[in-house]
Each structure stands twice: as structure tokens, then as C-alpha cells.
Image (cartoon, rainbow, N blue to C red):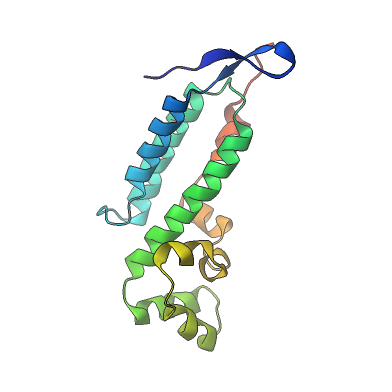
Length: 156
């Protein structure tokens, strides 16, 4: 277990920080859970992800990591969108699912046959407008920033 350490921060005050090794281990863990080829349903993936994030955030709740977590949260949502896009596999399934998510038929046809790679699609308006944060939340995803807002306490 990697624990937070004290480092001299802003205005010469000491504060708890997460080490580079701690960030790397957390990101590696998230990456292994959100691997597109890992044989898991979306619900299993989100459940496992929530367990890991809750534990990690509780461990580092006294540190000031809001900015880094915000960036990591965006990356994690893109990974989840990528997993969903990969699960759809075939062009027709992509088209039908895009239509179900509210895209017009012609646009869904064009987007389902895009020549962009999966990671590029996950970051493009194709999936950002259809698989939104609110839709992910309805499926069981809890954003990392919610963990910070719920667990962060003051030590003073």
C-alpha cells in the first residue's frame, strides 16, 4: 500500500500529496479494469471500477488532488466510451445503438461507418454527445469528483 507523504507546497506550507508511484499504480489499475478486450459486462466493469475508486479516494481523502482527479476522470470516461464502442462491434449494431441514443438515421449511418479508430471515436462528438456523463451515471458510473466531494475533509 502506498501512503500519502508530506511535501512542501504553496507558500511554504507542508501538505499531503500522492506520490508519482501512487498515481501510476492507480492509473494502471484503472487501465486494467477498462481494457476493451477484458471479458466483462458494462455493469461488472462499473462495479469493479467503483470499488477501486472508492477505496483509493478514501485512502487519499486528505490530499489536495482535485485538478489531477478532474483530468483523470475525463480520461476514464473516454476509456468507458471506448469499451462501449468496442462492445458494439458490428456496423449495424453501432448504427442501431446510435439511433437508440437519439441520433438521426442518416447521421447514425455515417457515424457507424467512420474510419476513425475506436479511441478517436471515444473522444469525438460521436460518443461524447450520445454516451454522456448522465447516461453513464444511470448505468452505475460514479465520477471521481463525486468521491472527492463526499470524502474530502479538513484536517484543521
